[in-house]
Image 1 (cartoon, rainbow, N blue to C red):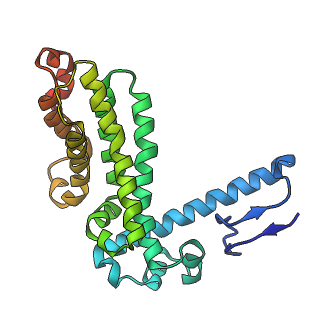
Image 2: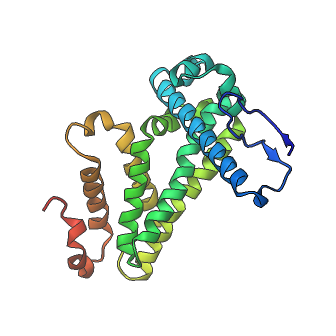
Length: 246
């Protein structure tokens, strides 16, 4: 079996995106399992590097962070980082993109699991956004503070992904309007309000952490939005969302 190798750390034996296996691995279950394990290790290593970069860049600013400092924070060699990212600009973009792509996966799962009711689906989606933000608080702050440091192409990528990120919320609000559950003339505006509430958990976490758990924060913000959205005649059916803590 031969392989073309585009940047794999021999010590980690991780499969990079550029690793192409020419033989038919499907014929050998053991090789399939080995490749899957190698890809999993590569994903874990990439996550480790992104987390280290996000922590440092939030604390010190992206301009003050070097690839060496990221390597030190992650406990790896600088050479290993360059096998995953072309440079610091690529690393910053990857940190921000990672959060936005995680939204797409987690929010879709939450909506699918919530059933058919548009109100349940909207609350589940908002909760998923907040949970992603909680896990990626450092990176979420970077999205606001460091986007200006990206290249023009990088900023275009971020803008496109942000529009895609808000799409499920817009669609759910329109579902509620069509079902005569919501009163809303501007679903786009409400969708971005919900996104800003989710991001605020990261941006103001230093204050909220002393008085609110994440679950309580989600409940109170969802109640604030639903008290404004719900048709008055429908409110009794959703008191579980409208009066958090009671």
